[in-house]
Image 1 (tube, helix red, strand yellow):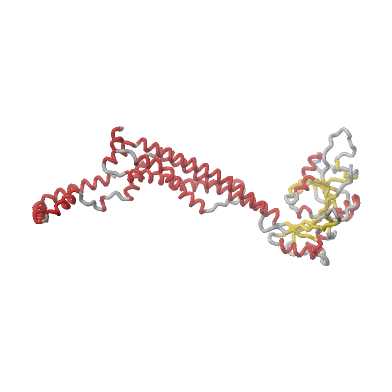
Image 2 (cartoon, rainbow, N blue to C red; image 1 turned 180 degrees about the vertical axis):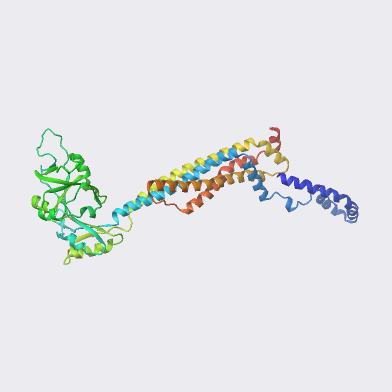
Length: 458
């Protein structure tokens, strides 16, 4: 605006210098002109056309708005801070949501995508619609499926049912005064169970094929079952009593994300279960496979185990994607998105508050500009551009900080950072959009200030 006034003063001086030299010519022209042309010439003389260089252009508007922004650096920092925090929170929360969703998907895929479970098929029997096993897993099932391509390891698993009143305890004497506790569940498996279900030995060892063939009375305890029994080491050869039969504890196992029930149970060799508890047949075969081999192994395993009647077995291969993991990812995204929007609204309110305060403090300046010829549109546009520029700068800084926050947190947690570049770019323009929305009301209020009222209040 000030540059426009200076250009008008310079052009007015040059016009005055040339006006005297053309007086005679103008007089002759007016006397020769018709009478009906006099009003038009007078109006042209009173309202000369404004040159394009003297008009208040958009470049002038941006220059005036940005000059005022830089004149108050402290206020600029405080105003931008709200937008920075809002955009950074939104970008960071969406990045955290994507990173967390990727970790959740990796956890689900790591557990499900490398496992095939083969069980006997079920068939209805009798009038009560009870189900019975239509097939049977052979005792040498692990050795058969290990020959298939894509199979890493396999183990037979069976649930061993104890008779009524029989329990598993760490003491040989039954104390009637002791509180009744739930007995851990008893499983009979083959030697490759830790590899098949990703188990980790806490201490001791797992039984081998020799224990199974001889029917040795050895047991491996799950971590939580060992804690309840008060057993935390195996070098002293502790024993547990399963239905009154003594079994030596040779190891404690943990992990087993695929079959978490083993952590609360007691595991014995299938040879001992067949000899002591009459185990008739295994209940399932757990197969650890390479990623992507699920459909192939599921189809070939039933043929390898029951070539004459493959329909008597049921093989469950991992799905391409887990519905549960997708639902968890969607819930995480919604929660983080809500938090980011709340933070962004807080930043927008901060811009609106500071911009409105700036309007109140600059009423005198607004009145002076209106008195010098500035229109309401130009006054409102100036404050609107200020808000947009502030939001744009805050969007740039906030997007950068949000991406950096995602990378730092992922590096600390040992995760793989996942963030969409489009979100960071959108955060920049979203900051400008928030600035536009936040500056609308203050700009409208500044444009409606009358010059006389503004100058009177100075």
